[in-house]
Length: 278
Ligand code: ATR
Image 1 (cartoon, rainbow, N blue to C red):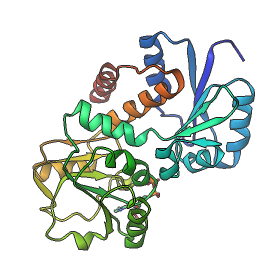
Image 2 (cartoon, helix red, strand yellow):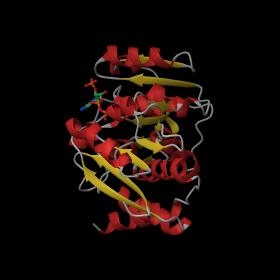
Image 3 (cartoon, rainbow, N blue to C red):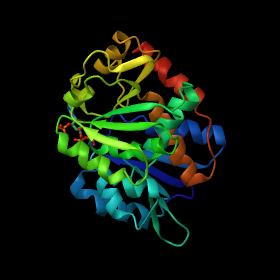
């Protein structure tokens, strides 16, 4: 392998990944000598591909759908946020030969919401839609910001209850079904379901969003998602999608690998501008 430090994102599909672009911009900005590529890797190829990458001197990987759980298993050291997320999006080669697994999705979400959009999570009532891997990945970093409560709601109620139970030793969290939300309202509603990918909307009643509340969809698309529309209809102060989170989780991975924190604002602006043109 060449002398320039090698990084990559593995996943399937991977063609439309914005990660190579984002990391190239970060590397230029921070003057880091590194290369970052996108590789199509299927689940059954995962361990072989990762072994080969690190054997050839690769320094770090991002893992995306459907590889985050496999990356969690692969890592022989894990951060606490990755441990509880049961998913890893960042693998980092350590000097002693260990492979560290981290999950930067949740911290990326928190950074986008608080730093880029000036929405504080402190003392807020937060509703998380969905109880799959995306929800699991964000709970611990959100708890770190000391909201007043976290409610996880899911179509399959048992999954929400189980997920909440896994985190309840860390902070105030409950799991329930959509019908159980009647009469409640929340300051921030986060959509962590996969519904946006098929332009669907979870079964949300009107009145769930408190006055002055905001909505955030972890997904992003070239046009507003059904959930972002819903947020506007509910008079959300802000109704946002996950483009900023994408850049922020990448910045955190970059920091894990290089020990340097890139500025994200210009990169987010560039991706937003391109999206508006498309
Ligand atoms: P991910 O890793 O992206 O979280 P996942 O683990 O398959 O994907 O979880 C998808 C989540 O989106 C689940 O909570 C799912 O609800 P169920 O567990 O009840 O299936 C939720 N979901 C998907 N489509 C949805 C829809 N149209 N309305 C509400 N919830 C939806």
